[in-house]
Image 1: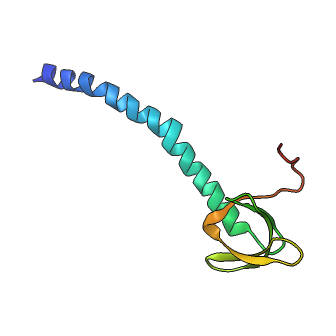
Image 2 (image 1 turned 180 degrees about the vertical axis):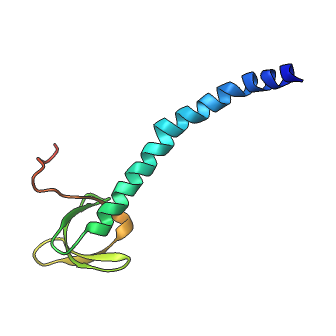
Length: 97
């Protein structure tokens, strides 16, 4: 009986190792990144500059539950879904080329 249990463990060991590798290199980093993005969205306020998923740079003029009212230029405003905010523009960071 003990020999069968050892054979089963040895045959399942590669699958266990593979799952551990996937967890630590794919699943866990994505969860951490999603948590940081969610925290960033919760912290956005009027006057913050953000970049949308489409690449538009906008300034938040009103925070709503599911949307942000944003200013695209001096004359145009729009509503932007929270799902399409890519990141907050940090004025102290150099722009990427």
